[in-house]
Amino acid sequence: MSINLKKGGSFNLSKEEPGLKKIMFGLGWEMKPDSPMDLDASVFLVNGSSKLPSDSYFVFYNNLKSPDGSIQHTGDNRTGFGDDDDEMILCNLDLIDRNVDEILVAVTIHEAETRRHNFGLLQQAYIRLYDVENKREVLRYDLDAQNSYDAGMVFGKLQRQGSEWKFVAVGEGNGMNGLRGFVEKYA
Image (cartoon, rainbow, N blue to C red; front, side, top):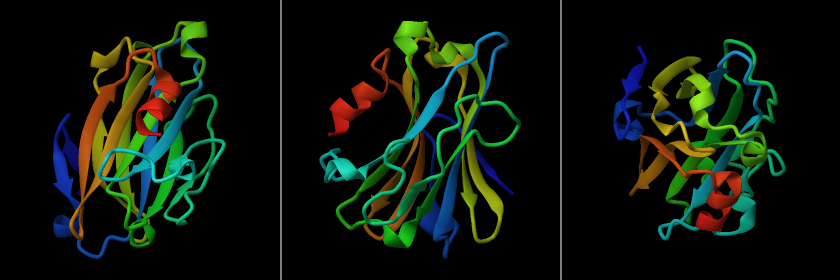
């Protein structure tokens, strides 16, 4: 049975799901009628100072794999149509570089300022963590519409605490700064 998290809620994967190694972050959203948008999922693998060890630890549509091989972005979905995950990111917990303390999963709206798009034009946005080996959803965080003026948002993050991994439902926007704002913050 899947766990539903609320904003700020956390789930200790290592304690509650021992043996979990290969996961998928599924990100999904539905657009309000007549509001086509291109959303992009990105992953920032950051150290204890909340900085990328190098630029190659920023995984997105132009860099689909982390240098340690732990993260694989499955590619850009430009329409968001359909009932399933719109973008997916695969993660092998055993391969994550020891210098990485957090994995931030962000979603941004492509050309948001030019097109005057924001997360208020979305419905039913979520992030879910899926156990790839056992083919089951472990947890889900459904975002609410509170970030209606944001063009970028960290949906969730994995945090390393010693030898354990914890997932945190973040739901934190970055205004109209979009992808550029995240890159400036974590690079």
